[in-house]
Amino acid sequence: MGSGQKVVVFGAYGHTGRFVVAELLDRGFTPVLSGRDADRLGTLATRHEGLAVRPASADDPASLDRALDGAAAVINCAGPFAVTGAPVIEAALRAGIPYVDVAAEIEANADTFARFADRARAAGTAIVPAMAFYGGLGDLLATTAMGDWTAADEVHVAYGLSSWHPTAGTLAAGKVSRERRDGRHVRYAGGRLEYHDDAFSVVEWHFPAPLGPRPVIGEFTMADVVTVPSHLKVPEVRTYMAVDAARDLSAPDAAAPTAVDARGRSAQTFLVDVVVRSGGTERRAVATGQDIYAVTAPLAVEAVHRILTGRTRTTGVASAGAMFDAPDFLRALSGHLSLDVRHEPADGLGIMDAERD
Image (cartoon, rainbow, N blue to C red; front, side, top):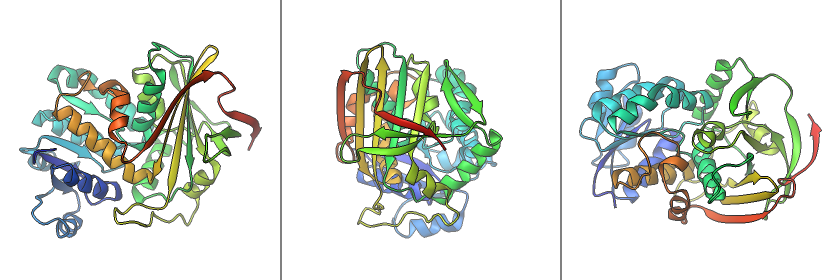
């Protein structure tokens, strides 16, 4: 399918990067292994005979130019994206190739829209940030749920994770984000990002089967607050995280994911419940699957495939829902996700009794 086209994977030896390399190979692309650590790149290359290894560092523009030379696209899997995002985007613009990343960092994604929108549009280059489980998937689901609506009152994204064994990259990126906002948490309300230091709330969210009612942390804010309102007319975007998964993330002895199948996926399962509300009507899109890191790979690689084959709706910096035909994109991931879309009267968004922490 990829016709052997070269796609640079920056941060190829990381947990998500390895899934992306494998997905590119499965789709007929030729991954180019890149990143700062030459030794780890060499170790990865021994598992994939014949793949080029091009060490590069975000603080060395010339090395990035060498890494991207002759490539059709680049997928940035190396966080923290507050450090790597802009330099790799700059290199992609110099090379005239599309850029996709898997950033879950709210501030880094906002920076990409703010800093590169005009230049990328002028260059006719596609830049898609947050093309991952957080940010990209929620945006595709929200766009699909919107259907023929041109605007909505609220978008709610509830994450039902069976567990969350964070990678080192996830923990490092989270630390950078917290430092950038001085430990405050983020909301998207009144059509803008707001920063608050009040206490989180715990509510009970009525997930569809098989999860059912689960306690979630209200406004456990993820990258959807950047991607969704970047193109959908909605003044309120709220995200929620299952309490058990949030505790896993903050545990002092948090363990990294452990593979349980031949594809390297962990036993973690997820259900993402997106509710769009307008007046007295709700539209709902639900996705279920296994391993949030593993499912990021087909999301990112499908994005690259569609960009390179001209199946895009815009150019410049755009989120997944703006760049692609969202329902068609999700259908293309049927081997990785199960999808359910419903239109129904408003019934309280699935939120049940609320209480303060």
